[in-house]
Length: 155
Image (tube, rainbow, N blue to C red; front, side, top):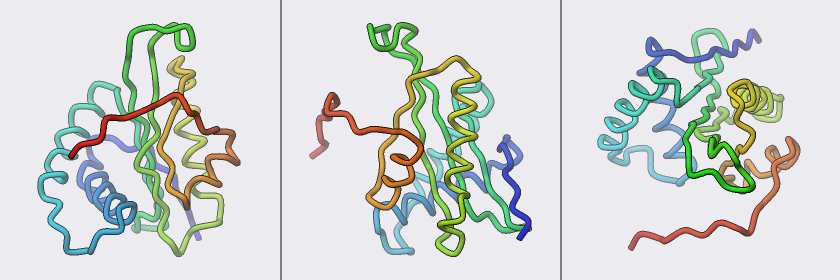
């Protein structure tokens, strides 16, 4: 097994979009034939802009020509706070590993690359949403739950 971790760029656009759709279908337990055309187009637009302007870093993990895992980190800024005086934040997203490759350290390595990228940009506040399956990985890495956030659900 020759696993390669590749920092994605615009030449990887279609692979990133395809990976994103795969992640959303899996995470939301949707049927494979779910119409994801709007999300696909919006994801394509997002990657085009954010990879070009540096507000997103993505990794694709290959075994030969096959993409077996992926992960990304989005960067954004909010008003400075006491906890985040720069206001600069990072949000880990789109973490996925093909079921045949799980429990081999691939997701941990991908997460490490994303966290290193954030820290190299001077961003210390890093958050994510965890599925039940992903939670042990994030806890092992050192992420902790927080009771401070609330959301306003859509109808």
